[in-house]
Amino acid sequence: MKYPDISFEPFFTWVNRPRILYSPGIRGEVGFEMLQLGGTQALLFTDKGLVEAGVAEMVMEAVRKSDLKLAGVFDNVPQDARIDVINRGASFYRECKADCLIAVGGGSVMDTAKAVNIMIGGGHEDFQPLADQAGLWEGAQPLPPHIAFPTTAGTGCEVTNAMVVLDVKAKAKLSVTHPFCNADIAMLDPELTVKLPPKITAFTGMDALTHAIEGITSTGAEPVADALGLHAIRLIFKYLPLAVKEPANIDARGHMLLASTLAGMCFVNTLTGASHALAHALGAIYGVPHGLANAIMLPHVMAFNREERVERFRMIADAMGIEVGRMEAAEAAEAAVEAVRKLRTEIGLTQTLKDFGVPAEREALRPLVELAAVDGQIGYNPRYVEEEDIFNLYLEAH
Ligand SMILES: [Fe+2]
Image 1 (cartoon, rainbow, N blue to C red):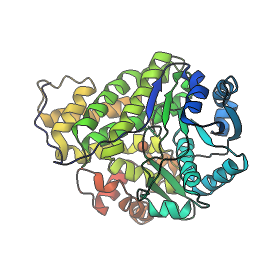
Image 2: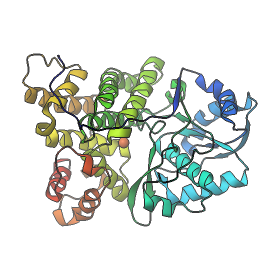
Image 3: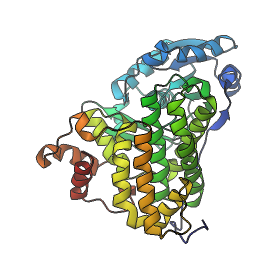
């Protein structure tokens, strides 16, 4: 298709900090790269599942073969980056006398590591006031050396300068940003992702797709992000079904890792929209894993936004591989929504909100709706979202 007439805000910024190193087996360079950054004693953040699967060990072995010292391993990161766990992680970092950190994991691990690094860099004892502040930009300074290994292809956390933390007491997910919190180096090693079960491969891949689609259609959309997001969509439609069907396919895994990073670079500046806002509330109240919540909400939110960004959805349909040449923009946009539904089925994600005990009665839905309505991402949705719209989107996804 020819480039359509689309507009973007007359002013935008685009920033992305990490160096990205890609290669199967790139973990072998972790010691050299960390020493180059000035780190000597690394604390490794991961989770128990990755320890049991031997994935954390693959990176630890690489560290042991280098001149970098492993000061300790913090493997107590649960689902979601929780403020109490972040505080414990920072205490452990100090006890170990670490001077740099390595994150090996998905979004929860990488976001926990970012928050800990902010605490260490700024000498903080408690992350709660920082989480409440949300934007940590004033007087922000570079943080201790930090290398991230994503083990899922979904969150893009290795490149984003934001983290989502779970405030257990307030039962809310908070977005916190800091200009130096992302890793100095993102190491994309597809060999670390081959043990990821098909279900998690599927829904983390849908998170990456949501980043790309919401990034391209958000109120902050701009051409740099478009380029990154559209290529992420091309890769996801080609390689996500393959990565789900053939977990050991390094080529598919590698392309999915790249897609996730590209989608992360897309939305880091444009931010997202209603799918993420509604997904954050579902995660905070009903514990729905983030990628799965997005997989459930995305087609409904796309349909809701379709008319507001019809030419952008046409570009998205084109990137999905749909022959849009003879289609009207509205028809192509509708085809893009349908393609997401088809992809979701093809990769085995058939859940709806009912499966997570989310009620279908309006009164019982109210706390969820109220939380989504104040989520930091909702304001970037291309179509203004009323509370009534949020009710309807949740009911459609039931
Ligand atoms: Fe996400």
